[in-house]
Image (cartoon, rainbow, N blue to C red):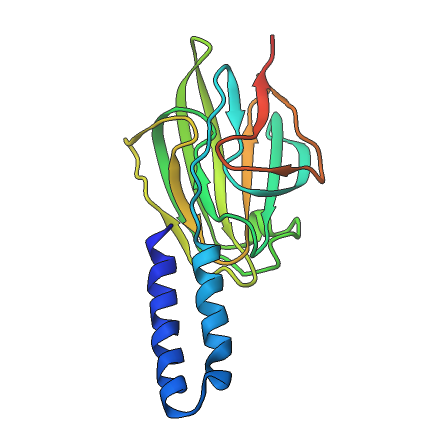
Amino acid sequence: MVIYGIYYAAALLVAAGALTYLTSWVWALPFYILAAFCLYFFRDPNREVPAGPVAVSPADGKVVVVKPENGGQRISIFLNVFDVHVNRTPIPGRVLDVRYQEGQFLVASKEEASHSNEQNTITVEGMVAGEPRRIVFKQIAGLIARRIICYKKAGDTVAAGERVGLIKFGSRVDVQLGPEWEVVVHVGQRVSAGSSVIARLKS
């Protein structure tokens, strides 16, 4: 459980308790429901990370874009409010750069969100199959999500599938892969952060 869920739920339960005391539980019911939803939304299940020369999904959600970009492939994953919102690194290695960019709050499922929305870009470089590989991925805010959280900074070492941050309430994560990667997911497919393979190194 992410600590933010406990904070939100506690505040809502205080409000619910006050309403129950002053009026009745009926009026407080929406606050109890919202408290339960916050605990559900900020869940953080453990994941089994697959071995081998692979890149795993940095987010839970639905693949909405797979397209050529910058000499490689871009994969975009849309997270709705019912998905786990903890983000993970696709490959092990060292964080080379973490760069925040202000922007708009367009609906995260729209293509324009990849470039126009508020976002946090993380670059990780590590050894995969004996060669240095680099992957760039973005935490992108959406219409409802107005807070991007990143636990890592440049110079940090990360394991494959390690937690790197989260985005609150509906969002998008883009992954930029180089030409050495073969994408193995397709548009419409659902993926899980840290456990779903999204690409394999080409032979």
